[in-house]
Image 1: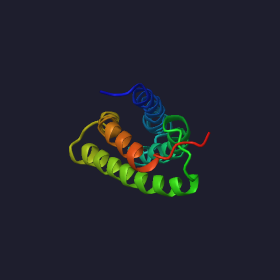
Image 2 (image 1 turned 180 degrees about the vertical axis):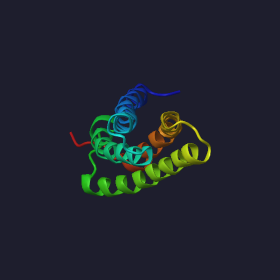
Image 3 (image 1 turned 90 degrees about the vertical axis):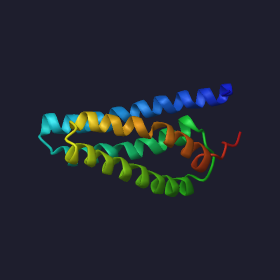
Length: 132
């Protein structure tokens, strides 16, 4: 069973993920629908923008980590490159090869990565508590 601290952390991760989802979905939709940018480029712009927002919110708000931000930043960059690259590849497979509408393809990709990211970040990246 989950402890109260874990439940709170998962709730904070959900909020941060919601913000990331809004950026990752909202920016591409805005760029495609209002600026006539190709979905492939618009999706990349959303993912890149979400990267910067995610590092700050995950480090300080979700995991309240006190580790060296530079070390965590490099590790986050590596993890994010793997996650985002995988998400983008899966998006392209769904959108280009399988013909899934781009909004649905983005939604499926983001939903599928939620739990995997939570566990990975909790156990491998932001696992150093803040100093009091």
